[in-house]
Amino acid sequence: MNKIKNLGIFHYLRNGEHFYLHRTLTTFLADKVTDFSALAPLFTNYKQLFDHEGIVFKHNARIVGTAEVKEADKMRDEAFRTLRMTTKALTTNTNLNNRKLAKELLLVIDNYKDAPQKAYNEGIAYIVNLIKDLRKPKNKTKVDALQLNELITSLETENNALETVYNERAEWLEAQQTIGNMARIRRPVDRAFKDVASAINSFYETNELGEKNDDTREKLENMIVGANAHIDNSWRAIAYRSPGHNKKPTPEPTPGPGPVEPFRFIAAKQIFLPGTVTMYIQASEFEEFDAAVDESILGAIINFQTEEDPNHFTVSALVSRDGETLKTGIELVPSDDQDLLGTFSDPEITVEAIKNEQVMLIIEGVRAPAGLA
Image (tube, rainbow, N blue to C red; front, side):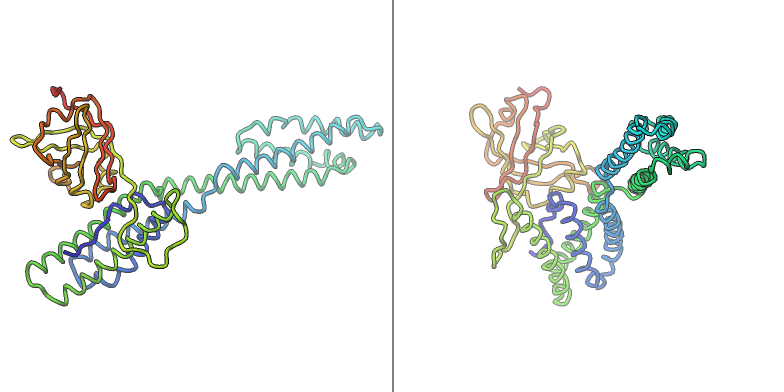
């Protein structure tokens, strides 16, 4: 049965890839969801969250970082040292009057000699006050006589440049506190799209099991096929940037997702369901688990390697906490008759879920429940 699938892709995308895939999906679905009134609030929520991601992404792309501030600070400090060293050199000038004027100006400059060691904002203020002092009438005649105006202008230019990038960085950081960052916005956007996708899948299944309306089927299939095509394109982009992969695109790309980068999580605990041999492994980071793991892992084989023989379990279901849609763990059933107690012969074990010869999931730090040997 047709469905929008491979929703675990979002976990593996870089920020730019994540933004552009959701932009493609929102653009593609915008006019199509209008045929289904029940989709409208879900899509509206998704679009609003994505629009905010767009603001965050564009804000992050023009970050003013510490590197620019450090470089501007270095240039300003060099201009300050040049002025001071030049003035100090003039204190040994053969012209006795110039020597006297240089000594007097050096006293003014040395009032601010710690500027390079000060914090950015304090150092900027030091240099601003120094330049004001040097341009006071009593000092201006000395500056003119010693021909130091060009060096003072250069110092002022570099100090202004530092102040500009420092303020831009401060404004950027303040804005980020308000609008958030990509790590914070990605998960809500992903969950909102999954809600839309789940509704589309549900409408399609309901139509196939009920009315079998051809027009409804066509509209839903259009959304499903198109969304899957955009998602598959992103899978191929991930495959192309894999280590050792030929970066040149093939003329006829094969359909379906590329190699899977396995999602990793640490188990919080294991629960043996009463009266059955079913085992439930709970994730430690529920939101991260929910964002990265989807139905594509159902049917994967989990290998628990003990000292004697490996035990094989099948991923039978994704489990949610009562009253919540957030996925919190996986339910496992033995692939064949096995003794569950033997599974945890080691105090700590790392296991892999394998499907179609690909590692889909790695569970790290699976610990034996208390009382099991």
